[in-house]
Amino acid sequence: MGLIDMKFVLMWKQKGGKSVFEEEYEKSRTELLRGISTDGSKLSPKRLVDFWSRSIIKWFNETEPNPKAIPRQYVSSRLIDEAPAGAAHDWEKTNLVTIMSGTGFYDTYKCRVCGVTATRYGTGERFTLDKKYAKTAVYVRCDTAAAHLAKKAASK
Ligand SMILES: [Zn+2]
Image (cartoon, rainbow, N blue to C red; front, side, top):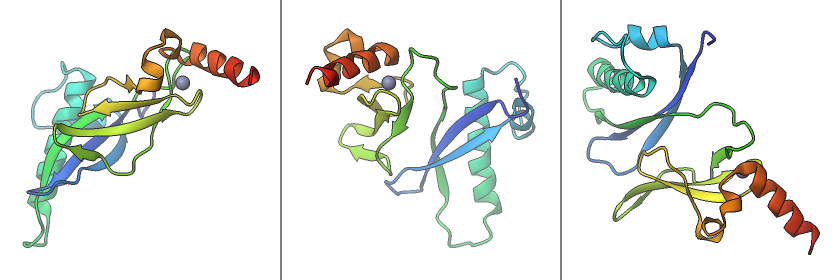
């Protein structure tokens, strides 16, 4: 573990607003622990990031000098996966702003390596492969998907 060992995204919106804003952070566990008011030594990385994100939003609202500024509301946070090793897709978000729909919000992604596309609903860790790819097991892993797509391209 290096000095910076946690990469995560903090999502917030303006009170009463619909658009979700995302901010990316890189912090060490020590820095995160310093930023929360409870003893976080036993917290999992996900929980620690969640605590820290909530308190930074609170701090932001409390220290905002403009009395007319719209307060920020915490939406959620998520850890960003470490560099993928073969099997895992390397997801890159393809929509600029999180998409709101009747049932919640979602983001669309494309793998930087093999090019398959997926959707991530809400704030979960799960990526759902798009219909085109979901039916074939070969696309679940990045290495097999890349090999399969290369073969397909060559046979055309
Ligand atoms: Zn991939």
